[in-house]
Image (tube, rainbow over all chains, first blue to last red; front, side, top):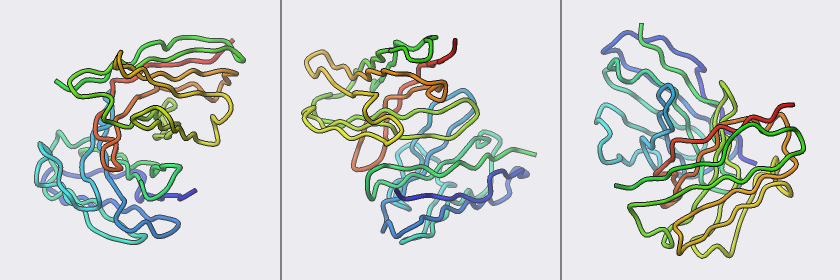
Length: 107
Length: 117
């Protein structure tokens, strides 16, 4: 199975700051990497697909980059509503796997 | 409005069984592959099972293979997860999620399963 390792596990950030979350795959997954946001007591929501493709309705401050084994989710100008857990997910091969999650807290 | 609504969760004893349902509306159900994903309390997301649009092919995570069975009723716009031989470590919120070009683009609100004596 492909293991996805996110870093950091937790980040406390001041509003308007830039947030960077990384996701490393245990083997190459090309661009089959997606990001989800899960706010407290809510179900996950698709944020970015295939590394960097935007999703309708998602603010433009969210962006992604990377390929192969190393990927990054960037939030440019954190807002209070962005307090959430963020998960990467690979669809390159079954079983589908997720990173362990990164919790972003607003200072 | 596209909607997935899970039901069927609850408290069950170790070794027991439970059948989860996911009622779908707002899109043509028989055009989409579907999944079950769970989240243990305070933990991350774990993919469990996938079923093709036709219902012919299914895949499972090793953690549930042989104990859980995914199925669907396309005319009734419903997805199911039959869970047998439940263990304490199966305690989690269970989500149904639609597949779309490799992503899980739509999620239900989840249903809580608690396995405890």
